[in-house]
Length: 129
Image (tube, rainbow, N blue to C red; front, side, top):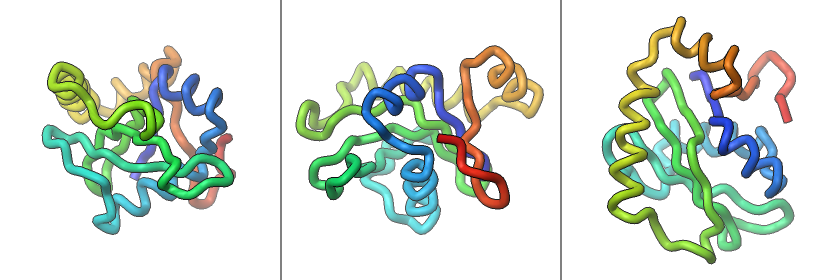
């Protein structure tokens, strides 16, 4: 499983103090069937706890997801500020999911080079914070 985050998500996570280790844990939970909603079209909703708080005071993340292959964190919002995505937002993220899930290795490499995506390194490598 490769885990990525978009340029927008990187900025949001940095401002909110969301560490890559929390993203890894979120994907591990999704892989175990623990998600907060399958939105269809390759999108999952997953709560990520705020630093020092439980998931009740959490962020909702929107993740492009294909089991055992690829995950891309594309959007997040504080749960207490927004209940869900609007129908228009959901449709736009489904289109984005289709794009990210169709990427071949060379397209991923290009997105990484251009800074549109950043890979979350885990496993045998040190976690990128």
